[in-house]
Length: 359
Image: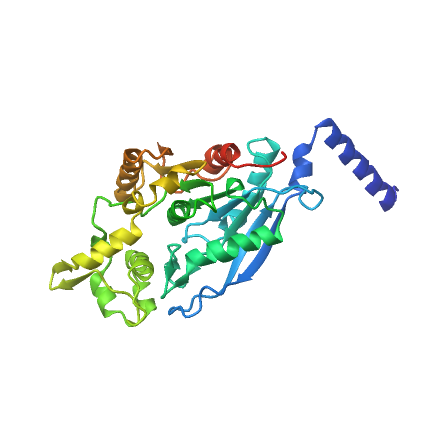
């Protein structure tokens, strides 16, 4: 019987032979990457009115050879849809292996990816500062990015820093790119929402009787659209002195008639919809190294298709260079796997636009 020591030695020899000959680089890479869990206690959520936890969790992907290398790496920040966990891409989508394969196949050079929990107790934070939900923009720009730069081998430059998001996370990616091109030099949004007006008006979506009569946040959770729009109002029409929802409602019902508050609606549109911000941040968007978004042609909510089509046209009106693609599929369906858009579109996009230093 071969001793354990001899078996280990033989195994190491085989690995070295295969790696040197190029026979099994995927095996070497697969065992080399890491997924690191971290927590960051934020100072930016003090005083929030809905119980936002100041301890934010994140998962950090580190490429094979990270510990042994003296190199620094570009960082991609990932904003998950709040319908998923910040860990869903790793726990259910096999993203770690997908990233390994992309690096092995030279789809993209080695990179770090950070997926962080950006949700409130009601769902999406909408990535803005709010006295009700907390200061999410400040958390990202003033705390999270500096933390990653200080604690990992990150290239601390906007040219080597990208941001990508899915659905509501896609909204956040574009918004951060608009307002902070000095921090994020490249932006990709997978099927973003909130880019502009839809086919239906926003106020047609919530259950206004439910919102008016709510005695707690749990009441609005009974209806999906009411939950989503209460989170939007908490971000963009916050009122910390109006419990239990802590918002100024932009509409109410009188009998069967929906009465819309024009001033609050104007304030909501100007603060929330990305297309209303294009003129103000046009120069910022023009300074990006890369900007792309996509959407599914067969999304069952037609508003998302309409608003993204209009968004790309308005960007063109302001001369903002970008890529926009309407693909044949449904929302969320084609993103993961080696045939998915993350592998075929997102990673090659960042491979072209990020600065990798010494490759």
